[in-house]
Structures are given as C-alpha cells and as structure tokens.
Image (cartoon, rainbow, N blue to C red; front, side, top):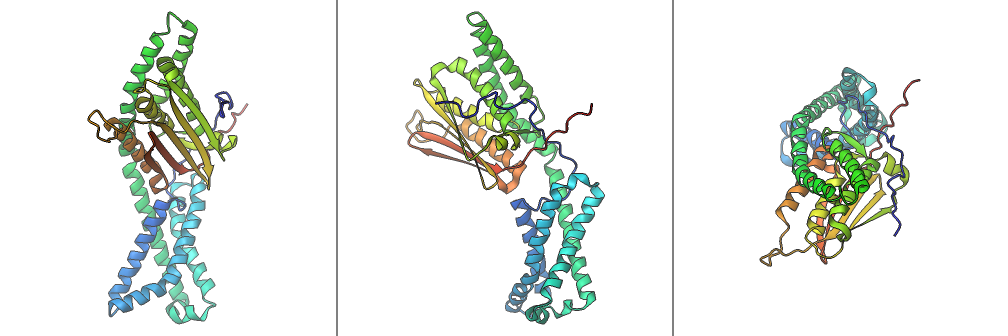
Length: 371
C-alpha cells in the first residue's frame, strides 16, 4: 500500500506558532464557557434568593431574569472569542479593559433589542430608565473584569511552573527507554551497514533535539508526523519485519496537516507506546495503524496495535507502564486544551486502540525575513 503521507511531502520551513501575551479569556473554549456560565448564573441566583420571599418565587424570578442574562452571557463570550484571536495586537491593559467593555456593551445592546417587547418591559420595568441600563452595564462590566482576572490567575497557576514540571516529567519517562533502544539499534549497524547507521544517527540527532525542546512548545502536525517517521525508521532497524506501519488519512487535506498546531511530542509517545506494548512482545509481524482525520474543526488521531489482554496469571490487565504513559498524555492534553481535548482507549478482538481528539488550531505563518 502506498504511503499516504510521504516524508518529503512538505517543506522544512513549516509555520511556527509565535503567540503574544494574551489575557483575554478564550470564549470559544468549552471550559471557559462552562465556568463563566456557572459563575454568572450562581451569582444571579444568590442575588435573587437574598431579595425573594421564598424558593418558588426565587426560581420564577431566576427563570425570568435568564431571558436577559443568558443572551448577554453567550453574546459576550462570542465577542471575547473573536477578541481572543487578535488579543496579541493589544497591550495587556487594553485587553483587560476590553474584557470589561465587551459584556457591558453587549448587555446594553441586548436590553435595547428586547425593550421593544411588552413581556420584557413588564418583567424588567426597572431597566426602562437610563439609570437602570447603566447599572446593568456596570454589573456586566464587573462580571467581565472579575472573570478575566480569575482566568488570568488560573493560567498563571498552571503556567509555567506547574505545566512545565508535569510536561518535563512526562518527557523524562519517555526519553530513557527510547534513547537506549535507539543507540543499541545504531550500534548494530555501524560495521555491517555504515551508511544506514549514518542516516539513523541523523534521525536520532533530530529526535534528541526535539526531546530537549521546551515542553510547552507547539509544533505542526506535519512536523510531528515527520518526527514519528524518523522514530519508526530507527525502531525498524531493531525490530525488522516484526514492525509494520500503516498510515491513513480521512478528510484531512495537506493544508490542514501543514497548518494544524499540536503540542510537541504528542503523537510520538503514543506511537512509541504502540511499539513497546504491541510489537516488542510479539514474535510475529505486528501492524500499527495510524489514522488521521479532520472534521468539524477538530483533529482526531487513532492508533491501533496488537494487544494481548492477559498477563502471565491469565488475568485481563493493562500493563502499568502503558497506563502511566497514557494518563500523562491525557493530563497534558487537559492542561493545554482543557475540556476540549479527549484521550480514550479501548480493546477489541485483540487490538488496543488509542483515540486522541483536540481542536484544529492553525499555526501562525512565520513572516519572511526582510532583505
């Protein structure tokens, strides 16, 4: 079967991500949306409970207020979603100010649009005067700046100290096993096939360079695929015909592969996991299938490898090292993408499958150097 993604298909000058400082919350992120909606609705419910005579009256008032609060929240988050994409163009003080102005202006606009309906005037008569609109705008601005401050503090808590420590711990678990096996494979070729050994050393040098990179760095899907091919070419020396790899693509164009931004060393550890637990224990040729797909602005990577679900005692069990590696990668995805990324595993008919799904984010094209 012809390889669907030749290693030299793309130029070396792949785009790189060069993000500026951003403190505007990403209103497109489901985690941000959920947290913002929960905070706002709980605050509104608490305020209503304090001035209501009973629980039933409070619930009725909350449902009535939701006709204003929910549209204002969703529209404000949509506006922040757009502002987040261009936030790097503004200084930090302006970004924080926009987080207050956006919900305030959206709230005023929603009140103005709904003021033409009788049901709104009857239920929100206190907003019909100019003072009421200004108070609503002020409350929305306070929510906006409060939530912005929360998300900024949350980002600081996870980065760089905690995130870097966890990502470096993940890389430290992957590196020794991989490097020792690679060096042994190259040593076995030095006398018999020196040219092949030289090519393997070049691949190994590239891999070591990536392993030494900052764990928070981002790369492109194309570069990660190229890295995985270099890794597999080294493992092929050691495992020979036992290692068979099949790449597949479904609904993912060359442009998406070239532009999709992913965390460095996301795909390679998953493939290494498949080699270590699916190919090494086998005495027969073992096939690793790697499927890449793109749909609904999401990237999905599915890796399937042979799997013997029984330990030496005949009890079904997933190897501890496998669990540790997958759990670390799952945690890494959660740190980088919050609830928008998933890593799931399944076993069917002697096949172990890992499925990673995360948002499709385009890497920023590097500007050409000035002559």
